[in-house]
Image (tube, rainbow, N blue to C red; front, side, top):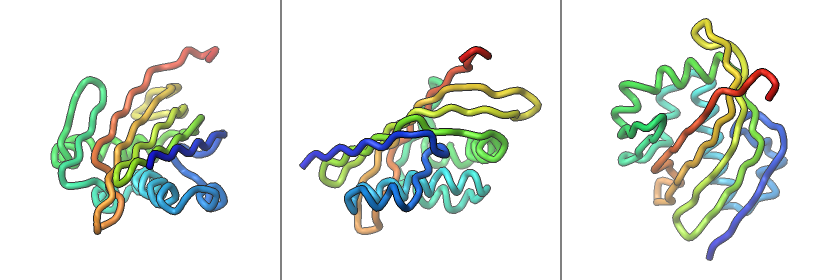
Amino acid sequence: MNRTFLVGGAISVFFLTSTWSETLSPDAGAVTEVVNGFHDALRRGDAKAAMELLAPDAIILESGSAETREEYQQHHLAEDIAFSRAVTSTNSTLAVHIDGNVAWVSSTSRATGTFNGRQVNSAGVELMVLTNSPAGWRIRAIHWSNHALKKAD
């Protein structure tokens, strides 16, 4: 059975309040909790919690590169944590699709602030693919893409 749930509005990136989650199906709520949990762990600086939500065979795609879970943990996780803590991100749309034990969550976002002494004003998209197992929903793939916005955007 293929189900789609759309949630929109200006909210913190990938963060749904409990009120929003309550309107979703139990599976969609659980999937959303994992995605939100990953981003919340980054914002808190909790690398261990973020990594626990990634499946052992997870792949992270960003800026034309692909990283395994281990490569992400060694090379990119610390920078993602620093970025998440330094800038303000807002979510424009969030869609949750579930087909059996596979789910994918797509989102657009906007980030503003200062990171490493540089101004950030960017738009981004994210696609997360999750699978359900006896351990619960886990992130199997992440694709991130973003671009700088002009001051008038």
